[in-house]
Length: 369
Image (cartoon, rainbow, N blue to C red; front, top):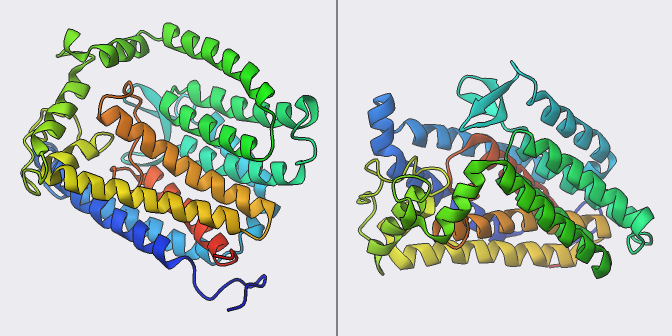
């Protein structure tokens, strides 16, 4: 088939199968994990499941539309996309515009229907960095002309996100951008100095907010405060442990009976492991590995540097988020408030992830797979 600028006839079919498989599992698990809580709070056991299905439908439509937009079009409007994302990040900090949920002023909207600007920033910065790095590869090895401008942009975005505050999203954004900058050719020596500054800054962020220190101590020994900071981690492990090889059965979770707080969001994998066991959890992880593999193949086979870096940024963002979420749920990292892509309940995260994958699928139409 032709691999001209018009692209191939179809996008990466295996990647689409993986995405729809994860979405289907996500909708089922959101219902299973949230039915008891939704029935108690809203008198409708399908409350969260119906909304997740709506978010998924909007995301799928958006994905198919974006999948048919040539990815080079994003290069032409990248600065306007980034500017819009910065304006949203600033707007969410203004009292009366930004909405506070869970102690973070991270949403803009009316009532339950809202958007999270930090999610838009992740994709917007990936698109802009892919353009900047592809056009400045000769300078990326230099600190002043290449490395400093790109990393400064990343930390300005990170700073605005931390004012909400939203450390989890900020970590995903920085990790993704660092990966892109490194692959574009940045020197290790520049990163080594940055790591030292980052460690000092991270310690400062933890010290400045008592709840973050509580999360660290809860991670080290959750049983020291089983009814406080360590509660979520302990209940998550209590869900995963009894799951065994085959699980208790779909819908048979005990932890969703008001033990694990809002299990349809960050800790949905714990409920999945409890109900579907080691086999079900492994199957989901394998699907994410397949997504990573196909994404890397698309990045390596893209026809230009912009397409390669854009693909890498998208698949890196998803993979870093998956790694952090699963590490938190299994007690390998402190609680960060990161959702599991495609599975966790949430409108902005799910829709933006599907839009990102739409760009990746479009690049696959030009890649020499």
